[in-house]
Image (cartoon, rainbow, N blue to C red; front, side, top):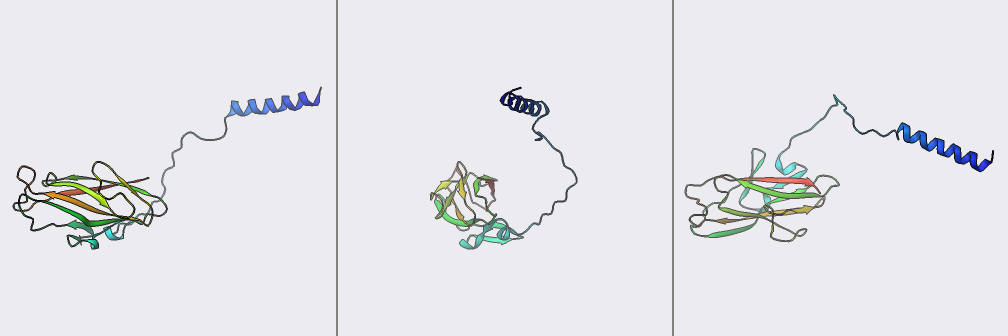
Length: 168
């Protein structure tokens, strides 16, 4: 037998055997009963840190960020560019930030926008998102409208601001 034909035959046999037996990779796995440790910290100490110190309107209360805007005139529109800061302290991964609002005053709080050196100033966090790299931050602002029919601050009210963060 010719040596070249023998080597070709052995190679074909090996390739056919691997195809028939599979590659050894798995397509699914279930691994149970593993320990997971997590700690819960205040907003200003978390991996995605919410920092109230950039604004007179934000405080830390019960470990959570709280924004309080007082003494607005009726039939007015106010824009606040720095209500609080979101800082990415989460290791090596960039984070995509967006937001949603709900509550009684969400119609009066017109939009939440991003400001800072690492984003396009004024990008809407409600209809769009921004990406911040590790160690970077974005300041979050809002426009508040007190015009009749849009929203009313008579007697105060609440709105919830939810931050959505996904690995970019």
